[in-house]
Image (cartoon, rainbow, N blue to C red; front, side, top):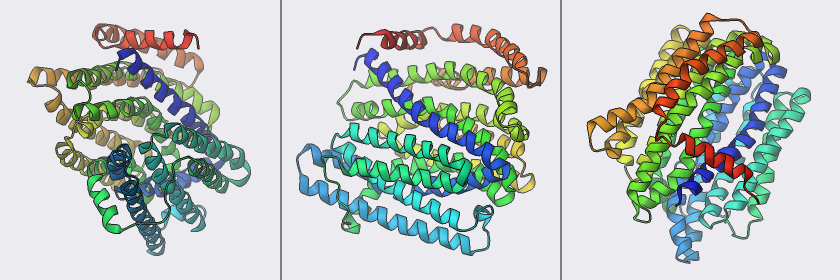
Length: 491
């Protein structure tokens, strides 16, 4: 594929994610303002049901994405239906286990997740999680049939409608409006998916077929499950050891961390199928390897500046929009910069998964995720404050990313010097950008717009020389040219 097309694909996916997720970000900010720190903490605790519920498919949906395209490509409709029905059987089983596990948790006496609104709130969030599971099953089945447009439209409709309804309802209905809006958006997405020309069965098949898919999808499922542990251990620890107000103050940092990870995740989504194609001989392996390493280098250079500017402007924005959340600013800064380190893991992970090196990825990722989780819980058990937990979480992010970068570099490069350069390009600019950002924040800790502008100029002066020095050959200039040309090109 031509590099111009590759760049445009990455930008298109990134732009689409930002449009949909911007609605969710605005919803989160407005919800925080309406609910206050305690309510925002309860809302974030409830979202754990949705986050972990997405993994109730037990890897069967991931296996379906691997096996179903082959059956569809060979025109074997009977096998395709058998695969889909087998995956659906596991999804139903996983949904039942999720419901049973949540009910058991609520009856054990450790019910921090229902502290703000009672058991009905997590029960309604369970409904949202089950709707989401059904969407994942349909989306995977339809993508294998080539119905990418239908899937994209449905998922965008869910984000825009669900988030929009939450925005409209939160001031009147509070958390019930947020959950109800998301369920309504999910049901609309399901209607759109069911109207696709390709029939997706809703009658479960044999568990044996589903279990075979779960085994096939284990590498992908296992990695993303470990990544979820890294990204959610802090919330779980604060739910267990902290107060809802602490998690509420912490929630601003969680939103900031999510924003940081959007662009690398979008880039990874574009490169993953190309890596897989190269692994199966359908694409030039060397060209694909160069695309991955250049994208890693470009992201490593550009993100520290973007994140640094965001962190510097967070102080006046929070003082203006959410003054009650001011005590959460130290955690926001640390989590945003920690997510900058975590972003370095996105492309190495898809390289290892797509190129068939999951056996090298999973043990390393699992070990790093376990260490990160233990670190967060140890800190939260002794000092469950937002800032302390954020520092521990950022340390876990960095450990996880460094492990994946080191693991991937062994297959990306043959010599040690190239591997060390890859590690430096992945983390060196981030370290410098984070040091500049924290230093400027400490030097001028006021919340004025003038102060943020002055700090931003200082960051530009300190970071741009490094960016220009290391940016030669990284593809940043080409990325900017392609973006400008794609905006001005005639339709």
